Length: 303
Image (cartoon, rainbow, N blue to C red; front, top):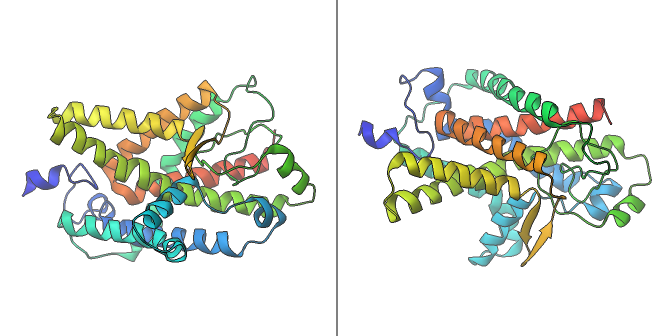
């Protein structure tokens, strides 16, 4: 039984039973820890009514839309799929909890340490982003945090949110009013959604599918399967922030830039390592807190 749990799809390393590291790597912890983020994202995308959101922000990160479109494709009504999409995250994590055979007991006192851990784990990526973001980066860069919003300032900290965008001219016409505070909150909401749904797609689902392909179908050894799965998922995660497939067509979400592509690929490897060691909850939380910190820094120190 230990060998079976050793390579669990939700966490690849075993810690001392009932220790903080073991408890917080359980899928049940991911559910409880991420549920407030999921609810905040859903409420935010429904009830925030700025000009930016009302006219041009479609309100969903692309990874969320992919999951929603999949549910519609398999037979769910469009309205029910909108509700079922966040529920799908919970259902997937419950399934992982069941298959992992880990304990269901939960200590609410672990929530704050988990949040602090996620913030600390986001710091290396913030530092790397600032280091790579050289002054030569072109002006007029697209801020990937706000759906449909094209900014005419350069980001100080690169984002992880891939979003559905409109044309620059249309957005600039709508964004003529003082919407700084509203757009800041919109960016926070979108970043939180990206943390949950991008990690669900590119780490929890894609890495598992790739592992099945390389290890079970192509019969590669476990180490080679892990390396290939991590590298491919990380490269696709990075590419997804530049061009996405949505509504039956490829759409450019951000102009290609080697620095950004390299940074997000490295970040993808980093998140994959977190997923392997700490499970989905800490990984998605780290991604979400990175986005929150990045949005806040870009707002406080605009360029």
